[in-house]
Image (cartoon, rainbow, N blue to C red; front, side, top):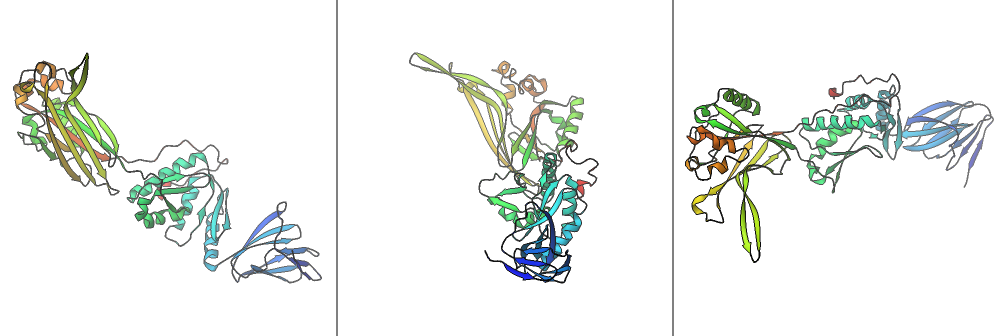
Length: 445
């Protein structure tokens, strides 16, 4: 190890490759390349410079003139004091200075520089501080890396806030990771959103990372199903013309007006709600609803008898797909099965089935109306009627005099809607410093 020694009357300057500063006070000096600053020294102080290629130190008597030569870091020891000198390009210096001014009154946060990046470190006690930074850096060229530690309560608040931003701008919701530092991962299939994701994440000091094994969560869709016995005379309320066979109509109303109308009709004795289940499914996945029963079918073998239960009734399979703009494509597969006495023998009953498929595109949440599910001949077929009246959901329909007299019909209303995940309610922060109130409205971002 070589040292170059310059002797003056006031001080001694050493230029060398490394310094040990573990037990000394540390002060940062930030300069732009070509910029300079003056540092007062005491008589007899020795001066140690780590990297003479980054900074130039000139002795002016009891003052040192420190000039930045090129971008990089160097360490300077003057007597018992240690200084970390950071030399930045003109652009990075302006960014550093702007960010330093924004966080100057925020407790727990500090700026460092690592491998060409401005890094925000320390401890974040308030989400509003982070949102304030992002708000002031939006639509600027300032970039930084957020490596501060978060209070546990802030993780859920920040996750909810990002979800709100992404959904408002029709972007995929990534997977947030908070250990050891905050990061957000997306599926590689979502790389087409990289430019927009980068725009919204940059003010937070984050970058989208696209990885192979991250699950890209698809929108959650709520499917509300209403199974209703509806008198034919009230069909005009929903624009239904009673068909001889299955028909799918699209109501111009959403679920709420439909429910209000049905409640009004039910109060007048013109309709009766038999079932109203709600099913949740992911976009692209299938949801199923079954209204009916099962009948045992015996099969005889050598010294054994097996019983197989066969379902019959109405099976609805709804497969919704939704994009990030809220548009939906709905595929409805309907299977109607009933006992066929005419083709049954004494041991094995026959089951008659009808399968229908419908495909409907929706620009927003609307109600799909299915009618003509049960054929008219089943109204007058008294064989097995007692058995049908015992079925769950459909049983009351087969007991209805209006249905038996062909005055009413079974109608199914299907209303898909995208589930919006709102802001989560979190308890007040417990570990922040006393008097450190969070006053910034997080919805302002």
